[in-house]
Image (tube, rainbow, N blue to C red; front, side, top):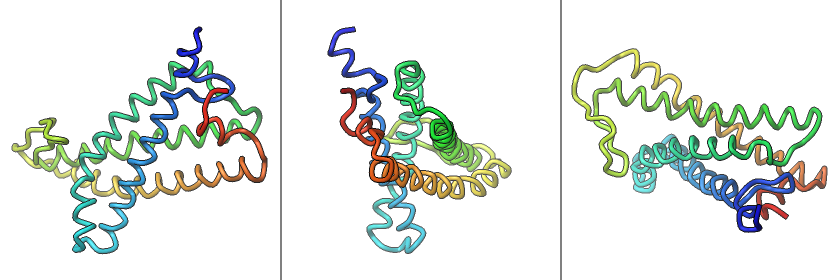
Length: 185
């Protein structure tokens, strides 16, 4: 493997540039989503709330695509990724699995709700759902009952994920944070 390829791909010593780009782009987009959702929950009548909330579906659709691309990239690099051994490694794996599960579940139920509402869905102007037809109550009810709740659970897991970065860096003084910030050595 040449040095250019090594830079892009994950290695036991750190994450490659593609994994890091996915991570930080998605972190930024999730921060945007959670900030907008918090503003909407606090006071949806503010202009800034309307601005952020107006982007929620588009950004959500983009994140849904990115989670599958990132997941495929992660699976392709699975054998080369940095590892933690023992209980810490098992807990990290479970935490990441929970994050990915919610990153798929949350937009999936939003799309189910959207489809059930019989309204069109055109993220970034791309016609994905035409709308019209009959409203499907169980889809809208399920989506309404689970989308926001799963999103706030996801935010809680993200906060735990961030907290563990600080534990790794400041308490355990290991290289975990460096692997996602600076990448492959």
